[in-house]
Image (cartoon, rainbow, N blue to C red; front, side, top):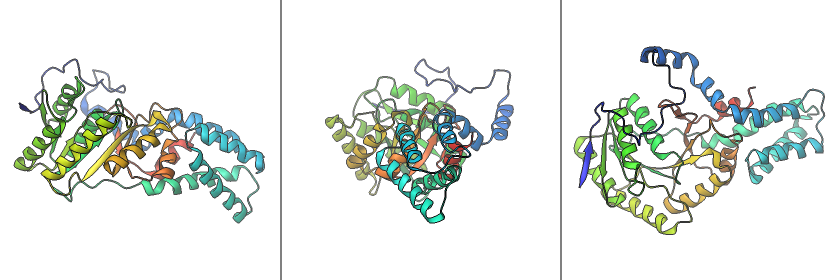
Length: 342
């Protein structure tokens, strides 16, 4: 039996997602909180979220590019080591080093300090093709199917996306397609309550059937965006990968041309494993966009460069915290500046 949950302000169940780590003190009003967030600004929050990445990668690079050091083979060897240990990946590292060496020869650079700006430019050039904000307005309803491994942050990302699209004046419906994990349905209901949106779910049954029913409900209610959750799975679980292919086929039958976006949610802490996930899910589903989560927790954060080199699928969103507003479109220059600005 299918269920439609419309948000009310009941008590939050035990399975609810954790409260944002940066939640304000109880005495602070919502208006004061919003004003504080506006004063802080996204660029500063991004910088704070990438503090560990900046301390690890940016700090080492700042030392490498110190005043007075000359450009030589040893410097490039040290730079190679730093980039690889920051999960930039071998292929992307060699690509960046090649770009730097060409610029050194072209501009006759001799000082190591000149390489920092050159590296920033090379990183931006590598990441720029990933910068492609998602437009959900061409179709109504716009069907956005989320996929990813267990623990990547799909459910939390759905809650953030619902808030983001609502802030753009769009109506949203959530499909609780993760019918494998016991708490998944309840967690999605909590996000629905927080965002005041309907959640279509089923206590037991088939993921594809739940999402099909949600699409029909969205068409009947003239909903703008459907966010379809799916169960987490490892790329090596072949039977589960086939199941998610079935979900996509059912969506295509419900609305020809859908899903309009297959969004793969990646935990940035997984490093090079994120590249493996991108390749496997893309081969299975034809991934059209990525959402990088938990950039506030990684001490490396270079996997995005490895992804850009291996399979440059657009990074639609990045998340740097647990708050509802901590998910934003990816900006290559802004991202690189946040890493390098000490």
